[in-house]
Length: 353
View 1 (cartoon, rainbow, N blue to C red):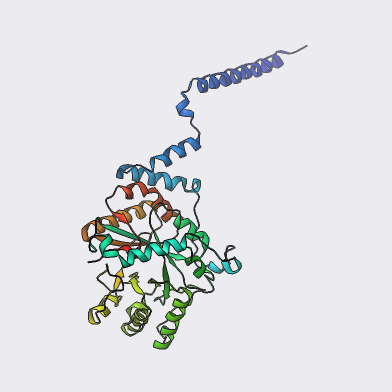
View 2 (cartoon, rainbow, N blue to C red):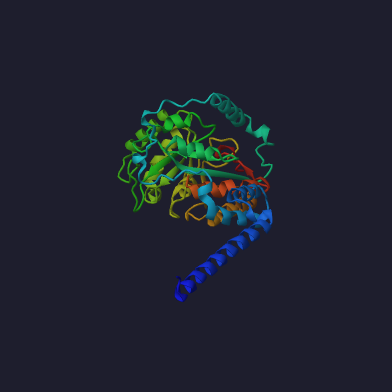
């Protein structure tokens, strides 16, 4: 016989079971009656938002920035290589040489542009404002490929051949246009694996290093400095460096890693003709750093600042690095850049009256 207490327990269990069944049925009913649009998968949402990146409206651009900040792992990007270059698995020390059948044609086209520059662009007059974006610190082929996937012209600045970047001359052979990112001594920073020009170097040492650089990169015409907050403030050493570059036909692009750089001062007292017929200056200098802070929204704001400078003075030079945040911000802004009224060009295509 079942006593009253047992009956009560059974009734409670049955009641709880009925509540559970009714709750389950009610939940299924709610889900089945929910509009299809609210059940869109996360992948569909991501695809829809990525499609919106093509919009050129500034408001949408900032909306996309927020999306990228939250979903950067959905997009394939490369990791920025900082102090541990020598530890990377993709070191090219033993990689076969890279060849590119389009390289010869690209170089031919660039040569034609250089020799006929005045005629091609109306006596070296800009048709529209120009923006040159330089991506520094290229040491490996994977970085280079990621940068070159951007849907507009970007100038890769490649480290010289060294322990941290053993195969960069081979990378340069595939590039339609490139620069070399020359390491110079900084005030309080040293990056292992790079052969820096130091404040203790002699004139002969500097000349020898630039000659070696030209041997490794025979078609090199432009360089910019990697770090150099100490070196670029030394008038004597910068004189030695700029003279050595002039002897090799190389134009210096001052990254302006410190406000006290003496490059402009040197050329004020030692005026030189430009190697580029359409650049009425023997040197160039950076206007904007894109990614001093690794924040997509701030990188985007800096890019817009560079566009405004280009529209004000006719051209601008922006420098960034192969951080995933930088590449995402640039990719995200591709539609906006296309409609900005500014032409994206390589550094050697800048028109500087």
